[in-house]
Image 1: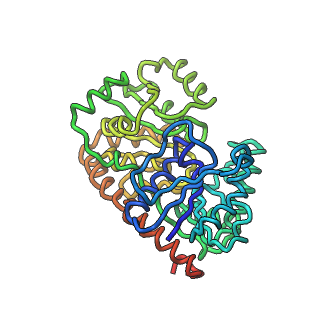
Image 2: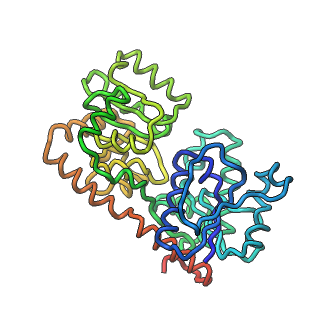
Image 3: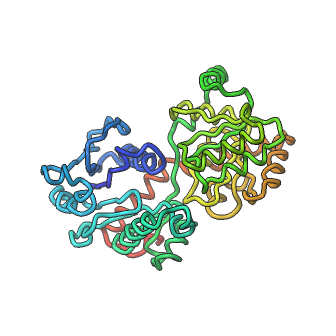
Length: 379
């Protein structure tokens, strides 16, 4: 089987969507090595975000001078000529969009929808971004042969907002990088913590520091207490609001923002944390929760949405807008060794369902079903 992927974010995005795309290609290449995987990359990457040793993974870029110059046009539409020429069997839009006109090529298409936050919480987006995101997502779900949702919550949103038939949508959970499943020696944890100038004991939050992630609620919950907090993520304007609160309440020596953290160092910092705090208002899934569970860290996250799907029955769930609930959950974990140990053990066990073999088998089945034109993905 020849499978084509929209590879823009594989080569050009360092964060969530890029990680999802890179991981899926690696997983499929490992578990289904007899297939060929063609990665349609609109332009040369400035940084080496993706490498592989498999002969069955092939990067494809625009050939003509015109499309090398207008590479976005190639990615959004003209790539259809290339995928026909390459005789691929199925095309997968990994991040919420597919090329315009792909339905006319006769090549079946899959699209992964990660979330519809731009429709649920439109105030977090500009008018232009909302319009573009909606236009691309609606076109994709209407014209793809199969829609993959990363959670049951996202599947329901696709049904509610776009009226897509449930039988066209299949939920395939995400996993996380293998490095988060490693157990590091305590000496390496100590050395890494020292490398970034962090305290020996701390709580942890990981993710873009933006309003939707709601980290200010955690900072407020720690006001007047002694615990330290480590926040790792790309900064936005919201970060200044968080830092202003920290300064006003004299918390500068207890809240840390390390920069340039590699995936390996991040996994080690997870492993050294007492609690992982993830008070996001809404997510498509919540990969940092899976990372924390694999690293053996008790998780406190938001009640409702997709968070229960990611966190499982042994994480603690709070109304993340209520600072008192966050404090109470912290006190429960820190004051009950038995509860803490159960959360670590059961959390690691729960996280095993998001493994590579399951992901590879799910996508293999989807690709085969749409090639055979079987109508219901959930049968």
